[in-house]
Amino acid sequence: MRIIDSGRDALHRAQLGLRWRAFRGATALVRTPVRFVVRESLFYPMRPLVAAIARRRGGDMGDAWRVLLRGSGNAFAYDLRGYGCKVVVRHGTVDVFLLWEIFGVPAYSVPEAVRDALARDGRPIRLVDLGANVGFAARFLSTQLPVDSIVAYEPVAANLAALSQNRDVETRTGGPTWEVVPAAATTRSEDVRFGHGHSTAGRIVTDARDAAVVPGRDVIPDLTDAVLLKMDIEGGEWPIIADERFARTGVRALVMEFHPWGCPAPDPMAYACDLLEIAGFTVHEVSATSAGVGTLWAYRM
Picture 1 (cartoon, helix red, strand yellow):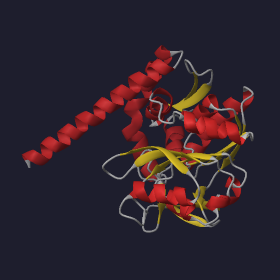
Picture 2 (spheres, helix red, strand yellow; picture 1 turned 90 degrees about the horizontal axis):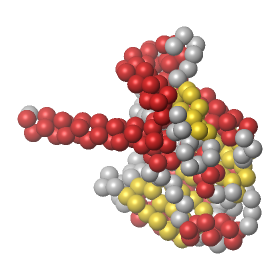
Picture 3 (cartoon, one colour; picture 1 turned 135 degrees about the vertical axis):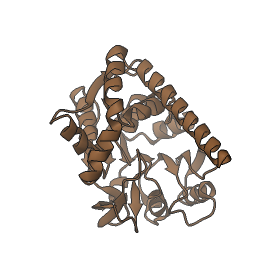
Picture 4 (cartoon, rainbow, N blue to C red; picture 1 turned 90 degrees about the vertical axis):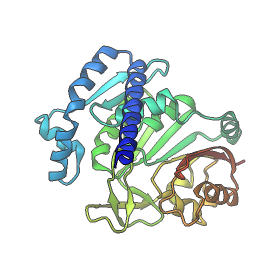
């Protein structure tokens, strides 16, 4: 029992350390750090109460925040240092961690080989973002590349309002045009069961009793004229990159997370690389954890 408790304590300390690092990193990114700290200090302690309200109201965290705050919200816009853009952040949520991960780390830093492949392609960059969450990844990529238009898929109702706010902020400042698709990314247009999991780990499931039924949309038609694909859909990537139509899409470069759930092979990284190479891609950068989760960049001429 002591060994188990010791392991739990170590995990808890590691999680707290990561949260503190993310909070400090996110605070350093915004041009109004005092406001950011005050707001996060106000909203973060409310998380347990919000989660309890959400459980009673069907799992919608966004709706729970509105109930608790009597119609007002926890979302605020911030100008980011060094990026020349503004983003909307929901305080007291995983958005603070994502802000640091995507803009601070940064998790989607574009390799030079990918930049070269996109430049040689010559088409205006149409970015399709599968698993857009609140739009931070798309916003980041549009600061790194000449993105002309964005198609953002997101099935979680709690994320859609913030995603639409981030879309509106960018389009008002002359950025790319956006289409927000309130659906799960699939290879068939039909309703699917979607388990919200925790933080950003929602995914299509078959047996979760508390899963919500959401629209699923066949993404392959949207990939026909896509140039850049970003995909983080918690196991939903496998049927898409295994679909025989995928090789015939217009995608010239992609960044994707791969996961063990839903993977029909014992080694998710090797399987992802094999499928992409079959579709004509060169896998350029791969990082993976021992749990079979990782990120890779790939491109093709």
